Length: 232
Length: 307
Image 1 (cartoon, rainbow over the protein chains, first blue to last red):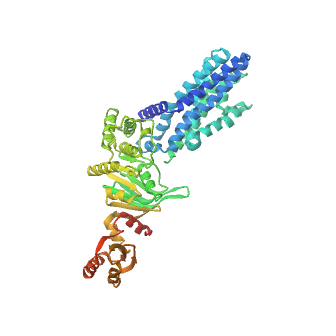
Image 2: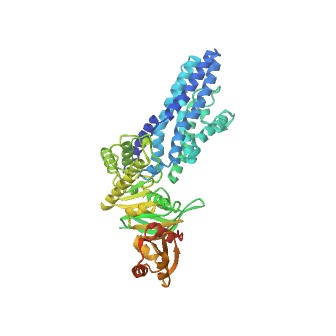
Image 3: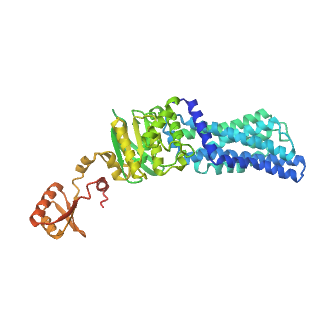
């Protein structure tokens, strides 16, 4: 039998190959380019640099909401919905390796689109180089939200992508803007803390990163249980 | 050795019944699962492939439950009913990946995939992406994914659906070859002559239950209590009907445009008397046959759905 690590690697490689040959990568590229175009437009209008940073950050956060849905939720959701998972579930491999393999293939793509988008958007909008902390924040955020997207897709495969976007728009982003401890449930809130984008120092970046990982990990655990019980 | 052992197995999808209280054993050979759409064939195949868990009862393949024991799935080759697959890959990439996932070592997976595709007549198309394949080519590719890792037990869900006649011949030939090599094969179909081309061992499923199983001719004997129909096309159907109407085994005679349809409880005796009547009255017979001499009629009998 093929080992779990080899299965994960193989699934990741196949996922990546399919992604490169499909259309999603192009759509993802366009989504990632939007903050850059938006920032360039703001700069053209000669708005104040501080305003630009706030607006560009908000726009980039929206990209963070869309890309995991576009890549992770749609890929996993379609796989289950189209029943191509039957090819995988009927093989002598652990099911968790399929989910993890897909994440290993897709999360780097999400991060690889978000980080240049953030860098170029800030350059275009405010002629600034983003801090290392903000790069780290967006990377951790993309990672955690990809895990959320994967689990939502296993729970509701048919509408995984739409539900992930809804989760971001109607839960994560609003909750992150709320005062009080409830905002600890929001990945985007933790992203802003890590990137030092909030006007307070009570929370440390390390704790915020841990918060992101905990939220993502909790969702992933649900996803793994779901995949283990999933029938085709 | 028992390959599949199904014991009082039921499967529901919510309130929808998949299969109901099936007890069945498969020891080897080629077996055709026969039944209309929604009968439970695919459910039974998916249970055997380890894609579903029984709601009640048990199902074992090579002594293990395939849903919970991945290692037993190494010995199973499964070709699903649906067409969708990883369309962005080429056929060779797809089959190689599936062979690898089935446990074929990396250094042998490519060769195994090539051999499986070649066996399915896909050598020329193996470097093309699945996306552009016809239905027949997809079926062949699916079958290649099922056989590439040389499984002992093959589950082929509707493998001949939608394929062209040439592909059909190739696929039938390949399944026959695999059976001759000692593989245990379960083939499902709702098209009766497809099963006939592959095996005479059938399991008739309807509304989630096994209606009958065994050799098709043995099953015929089981249903001999039902009327057997004989259709005769001749120049003087009324004379022929009059000659046979007095026989006690003849249950019903109906006239058709060019002949007569006789229903009898004793087909052998009826054929004898038919021959005698034809000779005695000098009737010119242009065609003689029975609509019951195929699996379609058998299935209709068993389901009580006479045509």
